Length: 279
Image (tube, rainbow, N blue to C red):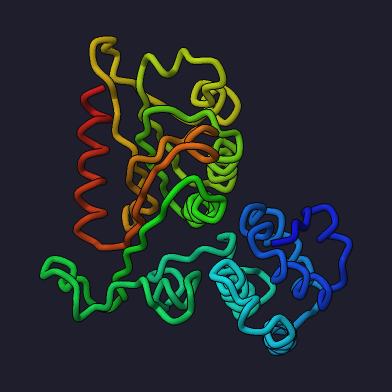
């Protein structure tokens, strides 16, 4: 797909922005912070959801079925959701857990046909216990800028709390998303490995110094704090092999899942509290 920089996108009128960002959807997802801000600027200037829907439809029609990649549909869905939320944009940067958005994850940021979303009727018994809200689970693989964009959007969707338990953080884009969460009033805590804290490029201490984010380590050089998960608002979980590093983002074969299953979120929250109290 062609590349579109945020700087160039910021200079485009709405109709051209919609068309170009859909044609360059991987770029939009990779730079989701900036692209969402640009789009919300158009909404602030009076663009309506009906106008956006028409522009998205026309752009997709021009591209044809061959141009409608998953990235294209992902970005189109995000544009439509942001437009439907009005000028405020909901304050959560594109990704909305179903409980916050009032719809399924597929409707919010997925393929649109729910092909990868586990239907309720196929959930395991513990997952069917969650009533009044769709349960989603999505699988992600790396290296992939699309998957990375999902992680950034996940962090951006935190409203009240963000608990992070990871081996290492050296990716400045993730550090920026964490810092932004703190700046908008989210209660952020980090647990990480004590030896990794000393590594060049580690962002955890800087996040503590710059934003006042509390962190704890295992304080045991003979053992690793090797978990890799995050919980937003105690209701949605990201977990997998993925280290929060540039190498994992661009080079490593990694995997992760994201889910809003209530019992899973409760279990990971309890584990975070156990480690936080232990360290």
